[in-house]
Structure formats: C-alpha cells, structure tokens
Image (cartoon, rainbow, N blue to C red; front, top):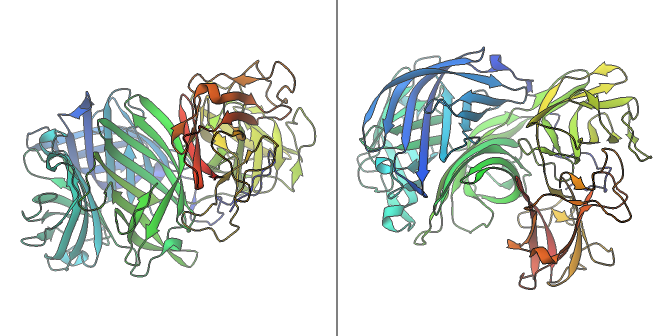
Length: 638
C-alpha cells in the first residue's frame, strides 16, 4: 500500500486531490440545525446524573449560535432550555464550539462533506465529563411521513434515570413504511442491569412515527423490547436520510441516531474515503469520549486517529482497525472481527467521482448474542470534506506524522519527521543531500510559526520536513513558500511526542482484511528486515525505527544528525512503553531508545521481545508515551 524509504518518504497514498470543497470557515456553518446531546459525569467509575439536551440550534455564519429545546437531568423529566454560544470553523472543517449543556467546556466538533451533519465531543474537558453531540441541518421545505421509508440502521446509548447501573447500548434495524408505521424493528444490544448479556429483541409491535412539516416529530418504539422502547422526540433531515432524537420519558437520558442504509450491494471497497468520527464509551468503570478521523482503505482496514478523553486526561491515539461489510450495508468495525456480529452499518449514499460512497458509518459496541460484556458505547462517523485550493496550496487536513500518515487530529511531535500534502508546492522533485538539512530545497521553504524548517524532500504534492524541537503550545501555523509564492497558512496540532513506526507492505496492491499491509520497519540484530520469510521470535532483540519520541538528551539541534558516538541522544519521555501483542516489554528489556545515530529526526528503539508473547502470525507493535499511543504496525512472529 505505501512504502516509506527511510527519511525521504514516498508519495502519500492517503492524500486525494479529488475536489469537493474549498477551504472552510465560519461561513460554512450557518442556518438552523436540529441537535441532540448526551453528557455523562462519572464519579468513582459510576455515572449518577447523566444529562441530555435536544432542540434547534441556529448558527449565524459568523461564530455565534443560539439554541432552544428541552433538557433533562438524572431521574427527572425534560424542561424548556435555551441559550447561546460561540463556534469557530477551521479551514479543515474542525469546529471548536462552546458546549451547550456545560458552557465551561469547549467541544471539538466536525462538519460533514455534505454540510448536513455536525458531530462533536468535549475531549479537552479537565474533569470527569464525557459527551457526544450530533446535529443535522433542518429541512427547508415541508415534510410528511412519506419522507421515511426503506431500510435504516440506528444506534442508541442510554443511561436510565441518569445512572450507569442500567446503561444500555443498542443497534436497531428499522423499516419505516412511509405511512407512519414501522413494518420492522429489531434490536440487538446489552444492558448493565441484565448482566451485560447481549440479546436480540423485536420492537415492531405497536411502533409508529409522525413527522411534522418542519422535520420535527415523534416515534413510538413500543414496549416489547427492554433494550430500546418507548417514545422518542425525533428530528429528520430534508431527504429523510438522517434521524436523531432522545427520550421524552422521565429519567430518559439517552441519544438516538439513525441513517438510511447505504446500498443493497455494499462490500469492503464501498468504504474508501476519509471520515470524521465521534465516540462515547464506557469500558468497565472507565468513561471516555473521542473525536477524530479515519481513512478507510477499501480493503477491510481503517487508519484511525482520535483525541480521546480518558479518566486520566486527553490522549492522542492512532491505530489500525479492521472492518467487514455485508451486502445489505451492515457490518462490523472492531480491532478483532467476529464473523456474524454486526455492530455497525454504512449509511446514506452519495456519488463522488462517479462512484457511490457511504456518507456515514454508525455503530455501537456489541458482542455476540448470549455473550456478556462490560463495554458500552456509540460511534458515529460522517464523510469528511476534501479540501482544495489554487496556487501554492496546503491541504489543512493533511499535515501528518511522516511515518504513519495518521490523519488529523494526530499531532506533530517535537523534532519529528512530518509530511504535508497539497498542490503547487514545488516546481519539481528535490531531495536533501546534506546534513544539517537545508531550510530551502528546490526553491521551496516550509515555515513553521514563521521560521523556515529543515527539509528532507519536496515535490508538487508532498513535502517532508522536520518539526522544530523548541516549539511550545498546542498548535502551530504552517506555510509553504515556493520560489517566492506563498501558500495558504494552516494550523496543525503539536505535542511533545507523536510516535509513529515506519512501515512497508508485503502484500502489494491486493491487501485485504487481516493481511499484512502495515508491516513495521523492524530489524533483526543482524540488521536484516523482519519479514514473513524471516520472522521475529520471542526473546529476540529487535531494532524498531520510528519518529516522534520528542526531545532527546543530550539535546539535538533541529536539522542536525543525531550523535553517532557516545553520548548517544536518548529518550526523555518518562512513560515510554513498547507493546507486542498488547503486552508491555519491561523497561529492563529496552536496551536503547532515542535518536538513531547519524540520522535526522529518526528514532530507534532496541528492545527484547518478551518471552511470553505468542507468535504464529502477525503481532501488533505499539508505542505508548505520556501523551500518545500509536498502534498501527505489526511484525511477523513465529
């Protein structure tokens, strides 16, 4: 799939020049939207006062919004609620907005490619608050019950009476008939007060819906399914593709999202694009929310990048997940796929470049029927805009880690190798041949916070550069100057560390689910590459090449080579860990971690694989630091 040639990099196959939108701004988000929000505050691993809010939110296109709707707290009923807030839309479609339920929070939200959906979560909360927010554009013309017909998939997360003692996660298959009746509703999910055992239930009996002309309405999901039943206030998009809502009952603290199914002939290749995603999850006693993106390769793999708010604070995550797709658009999204377990569905068909693609992915944490779990959660993803521009242009959504290409919001690390993509970036292809690296290459400069930075490689569509060690703050500005012509200025997240292992593919261009498309560049002690023909073994010491470990000791100048003689430059992150198959290698087995001698921006880890790691196939290799976790590559082990 993609081959990184050490420091120079290959063309970025995650970057697509397909035009669908110019850069975005506050003006990109305006008008009336319907929204639902669920917020959970956990104390000691238990929620006791979940809140929800729903109604209409109006964005003025200039950075301010107002809302009016109904709010509910804990075991109480809903009451009228109104207020206002602010928002800011970046050129990449990332929205920072004040949280409607808890105004002291700043929500990280996203705008969909079609402009219909806004989704978000308060990932930067400094307390134990987690939430999820979804909004859909209100219809411009009058609707009737006819707008809802065909096959839909829904997902719900519930905290009855505001507590986690009976929390529920459910996936619904819905078939509204266009006349106010559901011809079929089946529910699969689990409930904490039923031992977390997954069950399948039928909620068709007594179900109905009613849509008002303005897109508001109600749906009665009957009383026969304990996992999902009762009346929901719902909101419907103009063409009926999206339904969102929440419970009107006392103590009905929940969120409900549904989308029309994508296709009756879906397959793995259908999911092949970049998507924004938000999640709200509970794993045992750990509550978390997340906002980020994933890139689907169309072969059963997605490259996921999220800002995750854990009980210990926010963490930057990047990793490879797998997926299955059935012909009816249902499927499974999980690090470990189970055949026959459908926990997600692709939804809402759109045509991009002459090809039908799904606009959404919707799912919940579901295990096989009759199994039990302590994990509950809901995830919703929408197709992200493809950003284009003229002249010298940086795609603001494609400034990425140079080893993994993990998408926004995965940050750039201090002193790390980074890549940016766009158009008109250089008049030709040039590659650095001297160290210290030049700050001008082929007449091109990359300026970070106004200062030229070292360059490895420039081309019309991709530039590889080194992020300075001395950066401060959580964001940087980046601009390209191509022979005097200035690009747009973009903002990118930055963090002390941003680990990413370099990688290659050993299955060519025909990689499929569970195949080896993300092999880490890991060497045996004789400096030969770990491959399927020459796998690693437990107890062996291997050499991992990566970037993004952050500042080193002794300090290395930006653009200069790491020292090749003692004292070598070593890692300074106190929480660095290397994991094989999820098993942490003891600190005593990490023989070296720091700057790869004589290279710029490249890191090296010499580590002994624990004897207890089970081989016999592909074993994931992950890197964890104080602020980040990268779980993208694997290695063959016998």
